[in-house]
Every structure is written in structure tokens, then in C-alpha cells.
Length: 181
Image 1 (tube, helix red, strand yellow):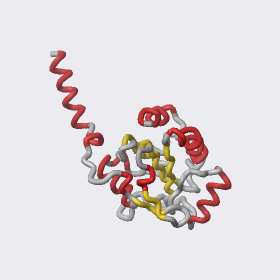
Image 2 (cartoon, one colour):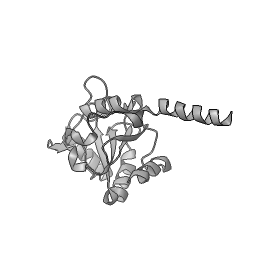
Image 3 (cartoon, helix red, strand yellow):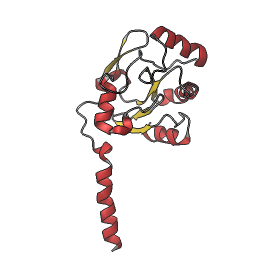
Image 4 (cartoon, helix red, strand yellow):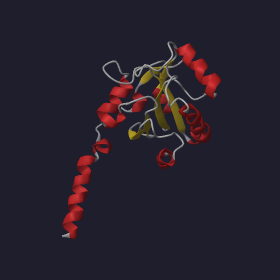
């Protein structure tokens, strides 16, 4: 009886762990995105690094997380972590232009990790990175609000996702980062 229960539970786990069994046609490092200064960022420059992809906004209740994102960058960048901010107005809480976002981040939070141009992160107009994330990891990869976090491993695949409520320096997130660095 106990053996059958263990076998049944093991089989059941395979059905619910679809994200790890995703058949990636592309990986994160295959994409490009516009940077905050208008340059094109080839994500293959982050190959063999762990990436924390975070959609951000200047006027959100979670905006103070910029402080902890910078702390993560300062502590783990030399170990191979890329904190990658994606300013977005998908939730109507971002400034009107890239220059204002950049100035806001630098003046208020001393941000020096990479930021993209203002980018849609959900719906039909979402950047292809976020459509890719949904396709390969499911609904948990779709930002429900600003400061949603997608953790990408060194192979360019999604390792885990975290809601806006998960602080960047939480034990939960740091444990996952350290596991894959």
C-alpha cells in the first residue's frame, strides 16, 4: 500500500511540474530588447548568467523594491547574477518617457543595473520575452502587477517566478538565486 502511494504521488508530480518539462523552442538569450538609452540589448550577452527579470514602475506601491534590487545587484553581480529591470506602463504607473524613468531610478535609488525602454509586459502588445515566458512557464510567468519577478537560469530557461509581494532580498528569493548561481 505504501509503495503504491509513493508511486502514485511520483506520477502525479510529473503532471504538475510542466514548467520544468517545457519544450523551449527559444531560450531567454535568443531575444533582443531596447535599452533605456535606445540601444538594442542582445540578451546573449548575459549567457551563462542567472537573470532576475523584473517589470518595474515609478509610481507603484512596490517601487521601493528598487532599493533591494540594487542590493541584489551589488551583492551577486560579481557571482553571475544580472538584475534586469523592465520599466512598464502596462499597469498605468510608469512615467511618460525613458529619460524620466532613467533619471528617477538614478536620483532616487542609485540604480546602475540594466534597464530597458518602457515596455509592455502583458496582453497582446507584450514584448516577445514575456510571451515566451508565458508559453514556456504558464500563467505564473505573466506579471499580475509591477515588480513581478522571473528568475532565469544559466541555460536561459525559467527557473521560478515570484509575485510583486516577494521582496527581492527575501530569504525565499535569495535561496533560489544561490541554488542556481
